[in-house]
Length: 165
Ligand code: ACO
Picture 1 (cartoon, helix red, strand yellow):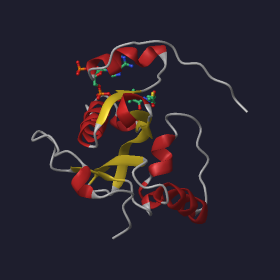
Picture 2: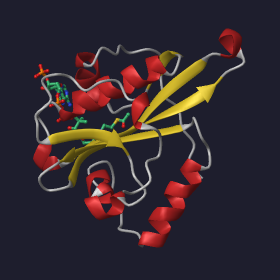
Picture 3: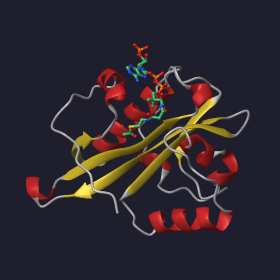
């Protein structure tokens, strides 16, 4: 078995309604073989990278324990990843050293959109964040996706600002 990014027992139990042909699990070191990069293409053009480069990114994340929690939803019969997202933990001095969860890179393969997988990613990551002790979970998104996140229990607060280098 390929190495998981984080232990499986941290994930909240899957919903009883989860289809038998779907599996929610941690990202694994060899998930380049299961279409992880192709799914990320729906977010922005993601050129394929070599297996060595993929492993280097995974290893860099794994060297920062209790920080990166990337999950995938896999089609069991095909072993293809249909959806993925990452929870990133931030330790604060505020709130007596409270933890904030950041949800990043939410992506559902274009063929699998509209089947509840996006919502399943978000409920899994918010459950994970709560279980890990976060006092809140935040994310940035395009105006077009506000309705989706509202359906997942989020509400609008403040604005995102950015500088690119
Ligand atoms: N606006 C409003 N409502 C929406 C939207 C939207 N853009 N997308 C889905 N919904 C609704 C659905 O109709 C559904 O409603 P229902 O519960 O009443 O039936 C509910 O939200 C859940 O929809 P899902 O089927 O779970 O959505 P899906 O699996 O298609 O995932 C997602 C949504 C993640 C936006 C997907 O379309 C996608 O990957 N898009 C391209 C990449 C992207 O924009 N990712 C988000 C980036 S923001 C970030 O990463 C923090």
